[in-house]
Image 1 (cartoon, rainbow, N blue to C red):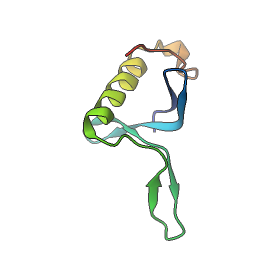
Image 2 (spheres, rainbow, N blue to C red):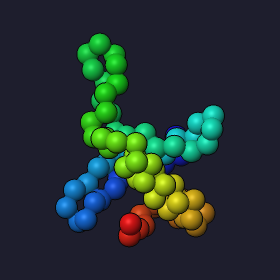
Image 3 (cartoon, rainbow, N blue to C red):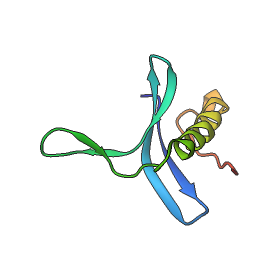
Length: 81
């Protein structure tokens, strides 16, 4: 895991604990999840279509990759999309 981020939409709705993960094909976003009694992980919040997921992922990863190295512990930028 590279980072944990929160995303606020239009100053009205926030999703906490989204994770930036280094996978075999590069960085990707994992939505916040919880473990069920059966041991399965279920998303707590997630986009309902792939276009929205891709848009959110692109914005988060762009901000993460543009973050100065001396601010790696304080990933707190704001992006207009």
